Length: 289
Image 1 (tube, helix red, strand yellow):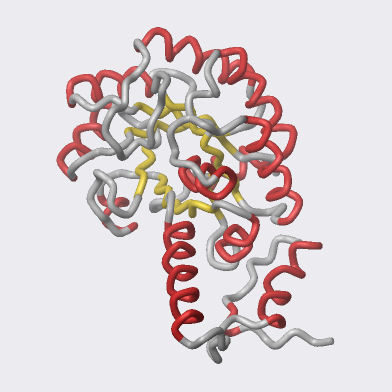
Image 2: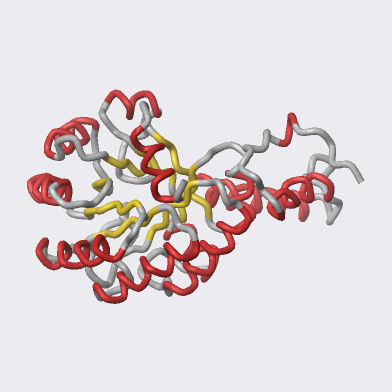
């Protein structure tokens, strides 16, 4: 089955489909042990690849190269890719979509922000005129062959949010994402405005949206949930803690660290993943030599 069609099938299944945000090959390898769907987060990629905040620094060839490596290592996982605003012009967005489809992406998220852009959960966002965004979206939709396309709005006023959600739902986009929905009531109103079009919700620690379980999201009519930063923020906390501990113990490595064998046990399957979801490390047999 083609990658886009496989993701569509997962989205159409009962319940809310989770997609876990990853920022490098190691985080993706760990996430793939636990989840079938991964999300290439712009927030995480900007932090890991450039060491910069998510304010528009990403160059699209870097994202294409990352997705190509992901697909080679994880041929059976869903890969939804954040392409920000399509990296400026509609023609560039179309080229990005062609390239990502060629290297095996399952889908893309295209936002309606104008430059300078911002992470969807910070202040200072501005959106394109609706007609200008729809022109870009139409070109992306005409370019894709199989990719799932998520139309995302970063509008903030509720009337404009609902207007754009309804307009996006009327297109051939597969899914609509309203970024930064501040309450359950807003989620319900967006859901009504969109009709039957699948709805995506972004979960991000410290963001503008409420923390909700998958069961709660299902009850609200949400079809897909992306978790943009759990891997990135966990790595941030764990690395900080590990280096503080190393300094406090005068450079003596801790006894409870991941070791060489466990690290290799994670990475060797990437040479030839055949689609079986590996079990978490705690229940995996020791690697034989």
